[in-house]
Amino acid sequence: MSKRPANGIRIDTIVIHDLETTYDTGVKGLSSQTNSAATHYVMRSSDGAVTQMVPTKDIAFHTGNYSMNLHSIGIEHEGYAAQGATWYTEAQYEATADLVTYLAARFDIPLDRQHVIGHDNVDSPDDAHAAGMHWDPGNGWDWDHFMTLLGRPYSGTHSVPAVGSVVTIDPPFADTVQTVRVCPGDDPTDPTTTCTERQQASNFVYVRTAPDASAPLFGDQALHGTGAGTNEISDWGSSAQSGRQFVVADVSGDWTAIWFSGAKVWFYNPGGKNAKIAYGVKMIRPAGSASVAVYGRSYPDASEYPAGISPSTQAPLTVYTVPGRPGVRRHPGPGRDGRLRQEQRNGRPRRQEDVHHPVRPPCRAGLRERRHRYPRDAALGGRRQLIT
Image (cartoon, rainbow, N blue to C red; front, side, top):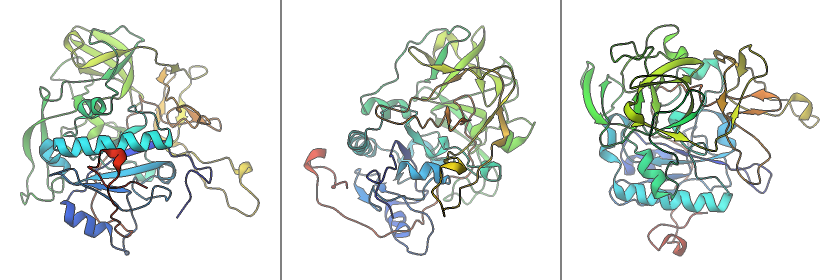
């Protein structure tokens, strides 16, 4: 229970999830008082109906990172991440866009991909949880289309970028058909006991260790150590997702290199087809050439806590460090106090855009809190239920 934002806790992020089950089963599971997680809203696939589970003033445990939970609103979607775009209907997109637009206006949340994110973009709070972070809503969520529905399509131009510039990953969703490997556990509806490959329209580009289609995929440090990545659908350490921004490290023919997870990686970008050059983006550079420690959560310094309250402990992520390279600055949004999840707070750098978010299992339905139904809200065109 909380009283956000009246109690000083800002709400500055909206997190998109998927249920990994049907709407009815998901809402039933979310209503259970015995579960330890929660979400604010659930969206139905067939018609975009929305059910509010937790008041927005309260903190819902929906991301696996308490620092993120403090400042965010979670929206679950009926569907299965491994099944690609199958469950994400236009009705669901439009209803979610209405809801996000409303919430953004109410809480002064910037409508960009630094503040409207997927569960697969959430930082791991510490090393112990890095490999187990979630990967929903998956490759089938069309971020380009969704941001357009929000009235905030990606700005910039599709052309070959210069070294040192910033690009926004922007592959054409319908035309970007990727081969993904789905293994037991990735799709709870599939009884197959072996891994199978599927062709799916996708919101990402694969990143490789060299400018060659046969080069190994980049392996996320938390998932693979120093090994190569894979095309398993849950292995998001091997891909750069639509809407994420990175600093260009090199260009070679049809390939563009970016600084990503502390490393130089390459993605196929003929004529700038799969990324837009971003203008007016602020970059930050570490002081000096030494690697910079990064954090997955941001709490006040121990000296800032009131007497009698034990400080929350935090330590930098040891699996990720940022070399002395520029990174993309996350803007805190108008009227905010500068809590920059990708920049720094209290002198501690947070994960930057070129430190890719490690992800693993998707969401599973079964979240706590009672179910709420509300009358229709005229502000949402009479099509949705009232948001509180």
